[in-house]
Image 1 (cartoon, rainbow, N blue to C red):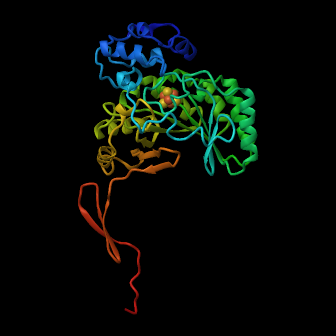
Image 2 (cartoon, rainbow, N blue to C red):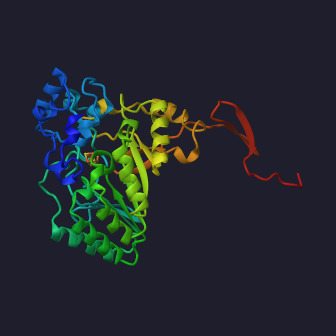
Image 3 (cartoon, rainbow, N blue to C red):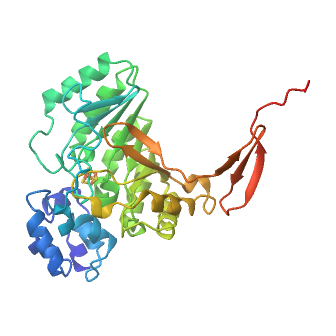
Length: 368
Ligand code: SF4
């Protein structure tokens, strides 16, 4: 596409400064349908439109069912609310000991560093605050968060999140990582970012040099569809792995009409592994307001998942999970493999549907 000839195309700051925020700009990349135009106008006050020129360049200009379009252009269904929809389905604001930190599990805490993202994903769980500059944690609040981590020895892992924490400047990222590294009980740092997918030029060599100073860093990114595994994304991951010495994992969300097929997920998993990314989680879509049109029924999700297991190498299979509404944490959504439990053996169904009997470990008393 000709827009890629723009001289600053590879500059991540240019990409953010030229973010697409209205239908007029988007029309220079694709032909919008009447339904898309109407949805953009009607959802504007609920959740901002925001798409990098790079991500828009991955869109099919004519096909409204393009998976890149479906993830980033609103649908009128965003205005539908059910009794189950929540502003904050994971109760993240409830478990907040200091502003910007959710501490719900014993050994790890989430730290929200920014409300800004390169692309505002229409299925976002945090759309109650993401894209809204109001309430973005400031430098004093960062200090309060660091003080909390210093005095709370049970916190062994800090997860930098947002919005996108890589929206911050490199000086800020460097400072935050060095402060966390100076806390003796923090064992590992994790970074949740979608920038390798939506703004791969953000993964600069200078950013990778910063990461390299604070080994080990675990970076969890968010590819949902094979179409997102572009040459630019592949190069960004390569820089992270080779220059940043970063371990890269991926979490996807199971999304209706986008990746709700075992063939698409298999293709995605193979591509991720070939880039050096370990598929980590496949999430059931959360019960957040205005996203029910993305949600795949759990039973169908399990069937899709069952078609992955056994068909693909174990290292390519993420764990299918639901994050329980109300803050209950993640539970695996596993297909049934156990058919029968007997006194000394159990019977299992394998990935082809064949039955196998194995010892269940209960010992028969020899005197009997
Ligand atoms: S990148 Fe993550 S936090 Fe940002 S809009 Fe997308 S899903 Fe939400």
